[in-house]
Length: 193
Image (cartoon, rainbow, N blue to C red):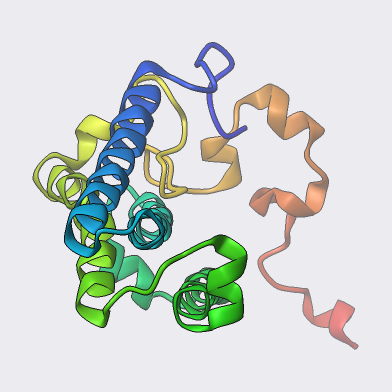
């Protein structure tokens, strides 16, 4: 099982971290909107900058939460085709929505300069930089107490064998091929012939 029976699905720490992350992206998006309106004089341009910040923040959320032990750049470097596709797709769609006039009109975005767009995207990424610092300084503080698995998929104890990881009741329900003790180490010489 992924967690002990008595552990909540959403613990206090997970809810607190999620609220802080979401709040940081929200604040960055609102600031980007306000700065965009003040800088360009257009609510449409402010909306475009807020959208860029929101998309950059959401992509950053995916990357920082893939592992609560490794950095976002470390997880991006890992071979994970779905993650790469999501990042590439979101980036491509953001650029198209900001550059193609028909899409800009569909979203009611105003024109934005490349400098403003880069600053807005940077604000979305920077909104979650604090989480990377927490992961590097105190990685264990993010884990729920009493859970069986960490957020990066490893167990608290050394992974070991199935018989070491699973309680006896769970092992009884597993198929024999899943248990290492059920596999013969090697076939006898007469069985090979």
